[in-house]
Length: 347
Image 1 (cartoon, rainbow, N blue to C red):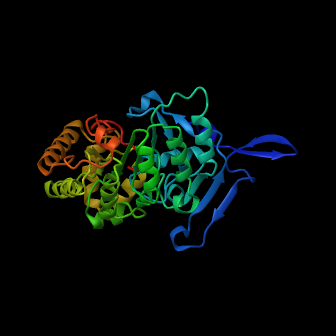
Image 2 (image 1 turned 90 degrees about the vertical axis):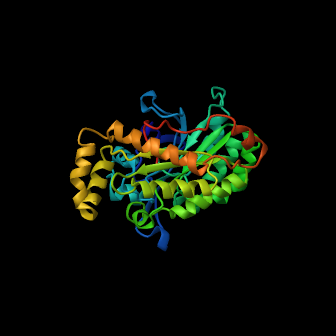
Image 3 (image 1 turned 45 degrees about the vertical axis):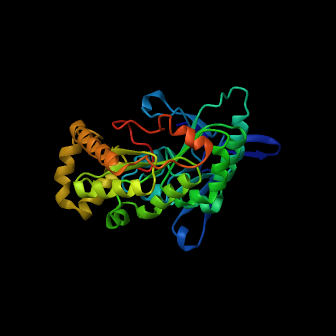
């Protein structure tokens, strides 16, 4: 990630000056409304917005756009937490409540897509933090970004836990008529008590399933990233069957299961939560994750095989989304991460 691109560019006395992100010239805002109480927004003018992903990342996309840093979804396991430390903020409460907003993102996207060097490669969004988190309801950056992608006929994908994506349904449908558009919602489980405990700032899983259904109804292909699957919390046969069945009922084009992994930053935050809420599971997690960020491969493969069998049983992907381009895309391979690859965002 090009963190040096997060700069404020000011113009004093006719001279262009670049200052660090949280210098005194940064615009800091708080809003005294229930949905934003306790949240601080840092409004910056980014120098670049279409970023290349390092080859070592092992993800199925090369270019990303991320209009926000930090996320009010406050998921205890979010792998992106550590990235806040690069901004001299902590990966716990600061990640949940101190949000960097790239207020010039729409203009930058349009400019960078028009650059002679750009070759129209697919762009992934929602790959670091959610571009449809609550802040988007106030800042409305995504309509401008989607409009630029549509006008450039540039293919793109979106991964989200936010229901706010439905606000932009018309734009997404318009883009899907002129380029390849792929969407996915992240739903690791449908247990509402577990959802409230580990994803307190997100819409309920049932709402995300409604988002999936609405997108497919409009011809915008939408699948489900079934992630993260939490060992001993959401991996029982009954829990997996319930989640896959509801994903099928929502008309998802595909389902991709991914087991929780715990990188530094997320690991400390999640294990602190686990120690408070499920202390008896701590030894089991230390056994699973004692040697690294990933659960043992045999466990991941068993979960993957179970979910794929359930998907076949319940007919995931049999309901085709409407719309000419979406219908054609169903015959192509879906844009999804490999089962054993790095988790994407929000996880």
